[in-house]
Length: 150
Image (tube, rainbow, N blue to C red; front, side):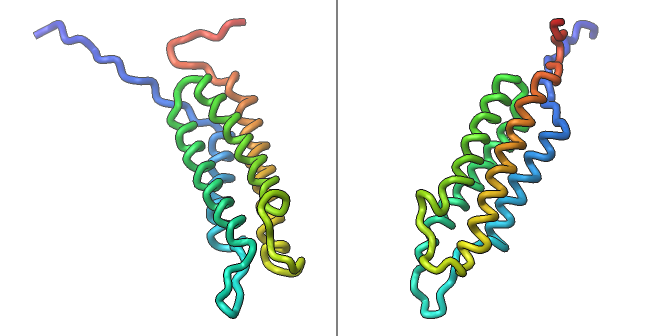
């Protein structure tokens, strides 16, 4: 009857306030690209010049969301730091690529210039800042079973 061994359970990842902020920024970015900040549409059915930029931004939004989920599942501080640095790089790419590397439509009054470009810049900076803030708070988390050195 008596000697049942307890199985070790993997430590549950801790989620802090900055993890929630990072998740909200990534979800808002993806939702905003799908609903508000879309590439231009032409009445004659031709493909606009900003379609590639919109597709790349949507792909980067998906990558950011996957990185955030993987960061939330990681229990080790090294893992979280690695994902924070990757999210910082993705945020910089989101802010820099449209308009500089990826072309937009020729007319400055088109939706890609007035909505998509500012939205991408703001959300890229927000994602990068949230990643830096998360990286700064990783040291404050105490891993389960270890004591913090002083």
